[in-house]
Amino acid sequence: MLVFLLIAASLASLFAGTFYLKRALALTATATSYIRSAAQGYVVLEGEGSLMPGRSITAPFSGTPCLWWSSQVESLLALGPGGDTRLAPNPDALNMHFSTEPFLLKDGTGDCLVDPAEATIHAKTREVWYGSSFEVSALRKQRKANDDFRFVEERIDLHQRIVARGYFQTHDNGGTKTNTLTQPPDGRHYVLSTMREDLLAKRLRFKAVMALGSFVLLAACAVYAGSRA
Image 1 (cartoon, rainbow, N blue to C red):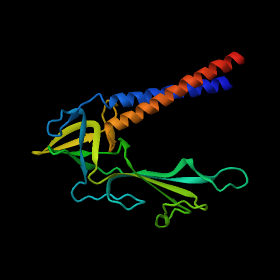
Image 2: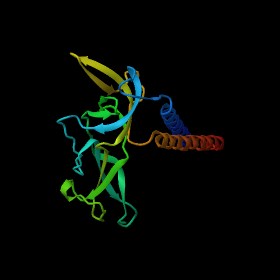
Image 3: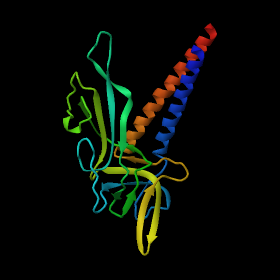
Image 4: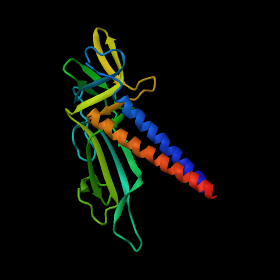
């Protein structure tokens, strides 16, 4: 039984390492385009995010106006024997939500309407609060021993620089042209990131190395356990 568990874990690590490596390589495979001259299809755009005229988007925990947000609540569990008061986040998150409102990307040559609904989003703005109930008004930055929940919010803030990888199309609506960026139909990565691409690629390569290292270690353990069985 142990051998099969080790084999399964090693294969999962191999899959994760390959996934992160492919993501890292994809970040450098396509040159950045200007919105005005971008080709129809899969492109990389970089510019400043902006709200659509007359629209507003507000993050739920902080109340901060933004372009995109995600939120989740995590239950906190007491650890250790004898009622140890240390707390740790439960991996099972509660009440996970995210915004799906489109926003504009501007690079000085044109505007593009970005649909974040199906994108993988890397947002560098992240805030954490704690509380003993779901009352948002009672959230605090400092954790107390009687807190039962951790509240996590990630955001793309107004006017942040965004690198966007997705499917670019120009639609002619009766003489008015609208550029859009959406999920590529061929399954390629749809990514919105407020992080520099070189730093994001470095992070993904690190994850790939760690996962592939785990694969080698677990595979070696599986071979050793099999020889001892």
